[in-house]
Length: 239
Image (cartoon, rainbow, N blue to C red; front, side, top):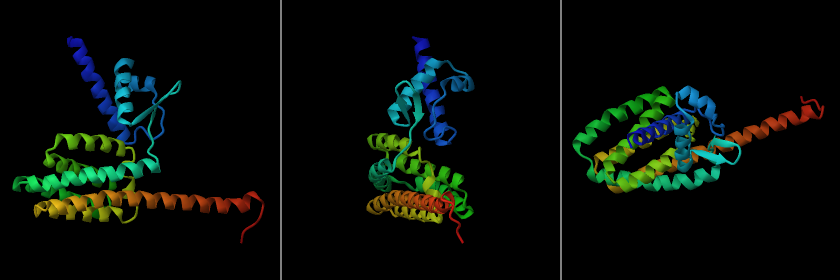
């Protein structure tokens, strides 16, 4: 019995490690999971690794392809369009409940986090901003103190980690995001549940808008590149 408990803890620790590797892009979207390499790098046997892989497949972070193995999942544009409105609704509700329950001690704890967020935004440090931003979202979720809501948010947040902070790459988005966070914080301070909910929903949907804009720009850039290559391929000189 004791051995089985240890084994269970081990595969959970391996799942946590793999999840962190995906979020840090040490395992890239679409990448094949090399079980032999991972067992060697993590110093574990195949059994806890495979149990951990099952966990991440169930979470949607990995996909299992017959006779090919596991791959890091990739979120399509359709996936993002489906997930972000749900996340906006759920995190909006977190902010609503947080605004009803927040205490002065809670606000004092949140103040330095928002100050750091502003510093990272001003410096244009996307990685540091993303990390601080994630902590703030988790703090508001904790203030809501609703385990059913929290379970749903946690599941979707794991899926969205596949895209990580891609939306922040849009020029100007990091400052816009920071301004949105400060508005949400002001609503929490004012104990304004409806305002906090509406602002949080808008904040999440603005992330989706930024992703759409980035995709459109990338598609336009690809088309421009193809247009430039076509005359060369046909032997036509351009002036």
